Image (cartoon, rainbow, N blue to C red; front, top):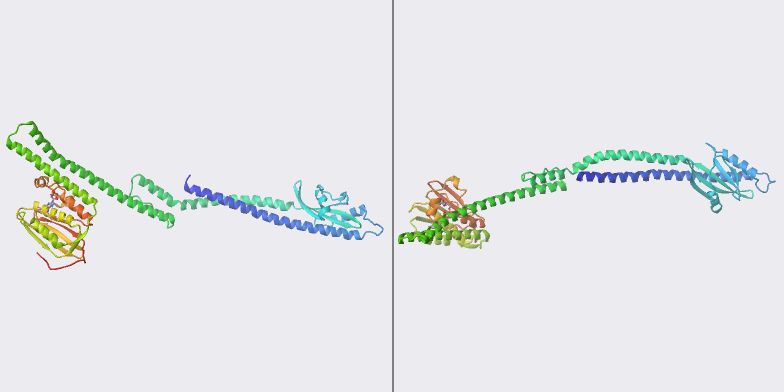
Length: 476
Ligand code: ADP
């Protein structure tokens, strides 16, 4: 059953009960008060009649010691017709409960008569035929006799008013329930609209439409729920996109990895097969074994690089403060003189916070790439700049440069712009991927500026260590 229908149903039940009980209580209250008033009047009238009877008995001639039955009848008949509006209904009985006088239409049993002797005054409500009466009874003592005077007061109107009240109230309740149902249906569907909108959004999302958002139409708890739902949907979309990107990257990586393995392995297997199945001369044997050796070494280097990337991605760097001077000293010692290149090391003093060995790996890779991409004897500038935002390392070469459309891809594992050239220089397309991974764990990134045929500049920024920016004299 729909939520709005449930609310509607409960509202109708509560309203029906409230209207039913209040109506019943109200009509009954009016009835009880009217009946009480009628009972009071009937009892007053009964007392007045008894008094009138006793007064009339006083005027009986003194020759009678006891009030004769005929006189009782006479007085009773006078009392019966003495009413203002209509004839009174009364009954008079003697000490033995023998009826001495009864009005026409006074039809009831003697139950009350039995009680009068004990309580002096009694009353009850009785139902005779179609009518309701208040039956009163009172003791009258007149001229040596104890008589019982009973009266009947017609209160059918009070009862019929009650049934009219009930039927009227039933009709009013029914109309109010009908009108109320229409209004409450409107209210319940208005109140549950945010839930319907949320359900629609959930279904759209379940069907794969992660960009769909639920419309927020209120500022209450349901509005808050819609806002939170949309926020959750946004986070979910972001995560799914990230996961998709990761899966895509992994698939690309696996494809490239398989390809990188296949080429050297095919050659290794081919040469190995040749060695075992043919009798080769010494020169060819050496060539085959040498090919197997160099390709094997390349595979070994590649697997070590891969391991480095995986380890770098998983580990947190052990941050220490070190001076830019120490890094430049290390690089100078490593490269100057060892390669046929014109190295220029320029740096500003500064203390950097990072894992020193990892940063050395990055810089060695960048300088190595710069060497591989430049003609022998070319100028390669390695510089360090103290900036407000951190310490910037840069490696500039004037080599072959990188086409603009390749810039985005070169940090992906196994990506090489010119595969044959890269392989001929022992490249596997993993160096920049490793650099990017190392900088990522340092919350930094590689900035690559390059122009085809003119050269490239690879730079990155590291946070300040020690006391912050220190700008000292430039050293060369
Ligand atoms: P490799 O092991 O091939 O050097 P890298 O990941 O270090 O792998 O580099 C990926 C590719 O990016 C290289 O194959 C090369 O084509 C290109 N590249 C890297 N550095 C430079 C550079 N300084 N100048 C021009 N091309 C570069």
